[in-house]
Each structure stands twice: as structure tokens, then as C-alpha cells.
Length: 185
Image (tube, rainbow, N blue to C red):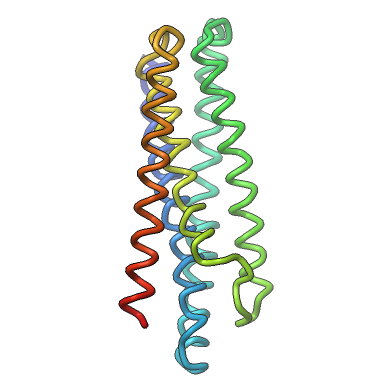
């Protein structure tokens, strides 16, 4: 029973953590979008986006990430046999990627705090594409956990499907960005 309760906590905070990451990078994009606004409007919006970013990072994303991590480590301690399964090693590899993405996000939060109204240095399209990285990691982790041993058996079909998904999402982001530029002039 304890293991199942901790697994439920892990899943709940995983969802909260990813929701925080998804919205966080959108806030970076919205901040960058203010580059073209009049100074007064730009200042007001940037202050609001910075406020929202700080609150999201400090109150939702990081605490949810910590609880997700602690509950995940607890699950490993309660079932150390997981460490002997290849699919779990694959999941851990993807989680290293998530850790790197978390670090990048944290650096962007710090950069945004130091801008003091200045232009976000990262290109808008790069921010929009970076917004999808968390989505890709989520796909990889969830499919690995759900399919477990089948991941190794059908790895090439899954890899091909994942690459197709990545390409479709990136193409969609580029098309949406292009249409947004046309609409906004």
C-alpha cells in the first residue's frame, strides 16, 4: 500500500512539475514578444511576466520537482529491483536530460531577473522550440514506463515514431511562428 501511495504522489507531482516547465518557457516567449511594444506597455508587461515567472518557479515548479524527485528516489529504495531492469536505465537516462533542461530553465529565469527590462537575448523561435523539449522528455519517459520491456523489443519503431513526432512538432512551431509574424505585421 505504501508503495502505491508514494507512486501516486510521484505521478501527481510529476504532472505539476511538467505543467510548471511548460508554462515557464511560455512566459519566456511572452516576455520576448514584448520587444516590439511601446516602452510603457513593454515595461508593464515585462514586470508582470517577471513576477509570474518568479512565482511559478519558486512556488510551483521547484517544489513540485523536489517532491517528484524525493518520491521517485523513495520508490527506488522500496523496490531496488528496478535498478536491474533495462527500461528503468533508459528512463533514468531521459531524466538526466530532464535535469539538464531544468538547469537551462533555471539559467533563463536568472537571466530574465537580471535583464531589468532589457531584451531577452534568446531568439523567439529558439524559445518556442525549447518549449517543446519538456514535451519530448515527457513522451519519452511515459512511453518507456508504460511499455517497459517492449521498449527494447520495438525500439526502432518507437524511435522512428518519436523522430516523426519531434519533426511534426518543430514544423508546427515554425509554421505558427511564421503565421504569428504575418498577423502581427
